[in-house]
Image (cartoon, rainbow, N blue to C red; front, side, top):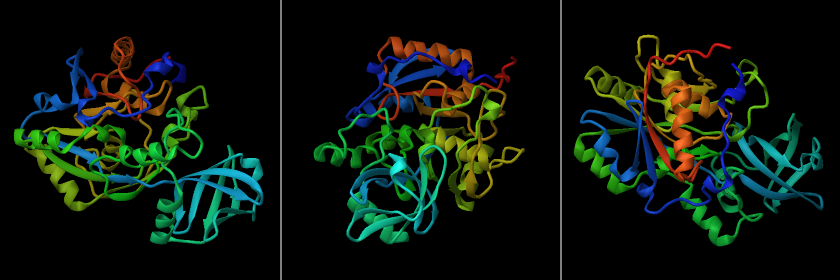
Length: 355
């Protein structure tokens, strides 16, 4: 289907540059029963039921944006996918300053060799550190890989960078490996979690290491020509069993964010049973897809013509999402990673779009 179907105009002033505090005081647009209702996240328990299960993503973002040098030339790289214990794919700026066999030097004891150049400014870097030592070096020298629509000064103001290290992690963050936050989880606080549990709503964490491909624009005119980025996810046997038990007992699965939803839908079989999973997924969900695992989705507001806006259009209907987004824009909702969120229920009547 045509990518332009998923376009909309978003004023710059609607793009959030910093989160709201407390986190659960973000606005939440209820999109239930084909009606819109302005709420706040701290009231989430009022719209869930005892026996529901919230499934969240416990990936932890690591600071993968690095400033270094090739000789005397300054180069910035953002690591976006780990390919071996010491090797990462990265987007380089300016990429023309890096050639195969060049050394990208971040610090005297932290550097990488360019072992391959790829299309669209991408390079493959082999570091002089691996595994935990490499992650520690990233924490020492890297900065948080904020999406390009969140503006910071080059290298980040020290105070602002320190705040982003905390602000760009969810309260569920545990498993290191993401280069982008599962942003719907940013709205949760201990107080909100306690309120939900008191209502009888459960929590289950699964892991999808979000990649920077989340922010890449679709550069084709038709969705059939788009190549989806792959991300690594894990659902253990114990986690799958708990999710399936809730479904068997009539509880609903509430996915917190599109990352949790995509992993669940990657792991579910044709009978609606979630299977253990430990692999990459490049699932690309567009209208006409039949959801088998997730009943309700809490998610932030997404970019025009993005794979994520296509996903929510498949989940709740393109026309309804266009109406909801217009309402959100007109009423000053804050968009994207540090912005507000919406709560959607699955609409099984959504069909593929005929063109």
